Amino acid sequence: MSGIAGIVHFRGAPPDRDQVHQLSAGVAHRGSDDKALIYAPPAAFAHRTFAVQGSGTPARLEDERLVVLVDGEADSHRIGRDWPTRGALCLPHQSGGFATAVWDRMENALWLARDPCGTRPLFYARDGDKFAFSSCMRALLGIPWISAEIAIDNLAEYLSFRYTHAPRTLVRDIHAVPP
Image (cartoon, rainbow, N blue to C red; front, side, top):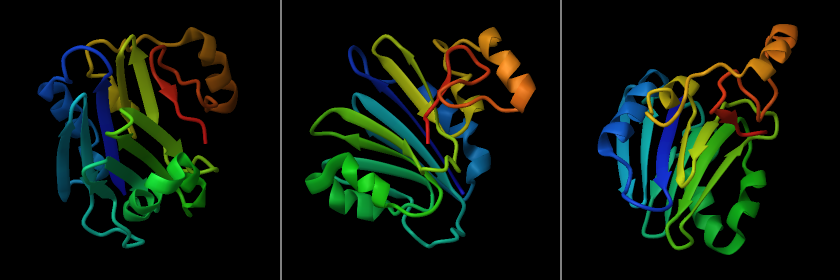
């Protein structure tokens, strides 16, 4: 299991390092053995991993073009190898349950994806030119520009199904990446 999180400021100052550390702490329970903080302005990322991974596939890749973070069974090195020629089309060829974030430094673009069944969670919030994501909703609640206000419109769905269907969540400013 891993925890992934990040902040991108598409305009203005780069993300505050304290917010990146807060995101890292918010996903610490999803992997306490290995911690990485990656600064790739205008973006910053946090990745936590347990030392024992079931599939043995690399969970993180950083090179001159890409930052690839994986929670689950996808192979970050395979994504990194295939991305320059196939782009996001390489993501459906990953197997197993996963949530991934790919930051393309050349394109200044962030891609978020989950496996087709939605096994691993992945949440995001946006405020103008600021964007944050995490594999744990609670990590996003510490970001000052993200409100923790309940989404009353989604409460009936949650009470009926004990679940809200992506992209809806119980928090007004936070959305789920659909499978």
